[in-house]
Amino acid sequence: MKTNKAHANWQGNLKKGIGTVKLNESGKEFAYNFSSRFEDGKGTNPEELIAAAHAGCFSMAFSGLLTEEGYEAKSIDTTAKVTIEKADSGFKISKSELTTEAVVPDIDKNIFKELAAKAKENCPVSQALSSLEITLEASLKE
Image 1 (cartoon, rainbow, N blue to C red):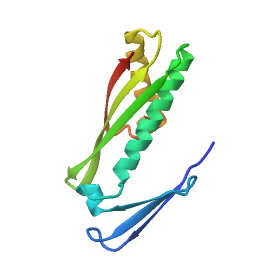
Image 2 (cartoon, rainbow, N blue to C red):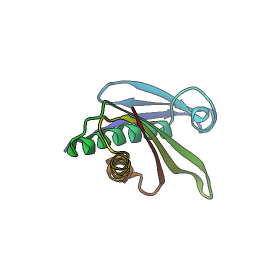
Image 3 (tube, one colour):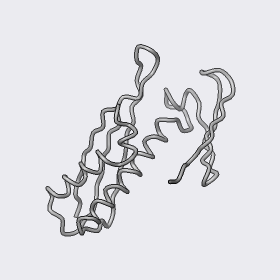
């Protein structure tokens, strides 16, 4: 099995420090800081990276399930919104909201919804995030 890795570096204190995360495979590096995580500052943050992973994983899992059932998606567009909120002992990631729109020719709407729900439950990132509330809004486009 493949093991993936990324690297993070943080310098300074929590509120005024700066950090970078670097993706191993692509070598892309992204800056992050307190403001980009808890306010509207520029840069990325761990929750945005989790959201990207969840949206990507769900879309791939959904495509795989559709293929297994004899359908081929022309497109699957998924957004994940990951929420972090104040908790008793600091902060907690509390939910991931998936919204997907897909173009899948000749599929019954009920089968579409059933396979989307199955992908939400079974994609590896959903499984890793199983302690969170995970919601799904799935729309079939023509």
